[in-house]
Amino acid sequence: MAAWWIETIGLVAGALGIVAWIPQIRDVWIHERHEGISLTTFNVVTVALCLWLIYGILIKSVAMIVANVFTLVVILTVLLGVRRLRKREAPT
Image (cartoon, rainbow, N blue to C red; front, top):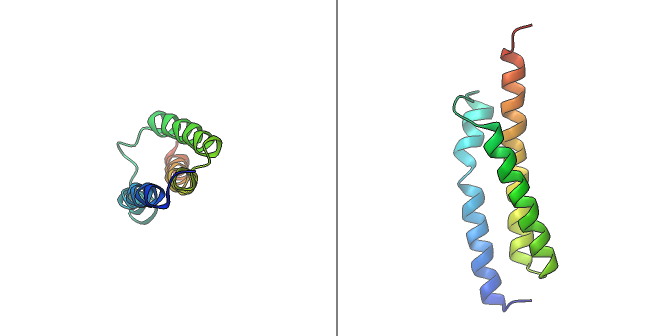
């Protein structure tokens, strides 16, 4: 495992990455706007994050594990919100 200060840098970077998604969550869940959100892109990002999580587990990096788990939760929150809104708007 990396030195504590290296892991701290990783945790700060991960926290900033999570905070960056807050406007997207707000748009989808509060303002109910989903235009311009590509589900394909979000799905690819989800797969990439899963692979980074596996990598973090393999190298035993607490920062990578924590950051990727929380980022996956945030991404899945956006994905679920977009799918909910699009299903609601779909013609019956």
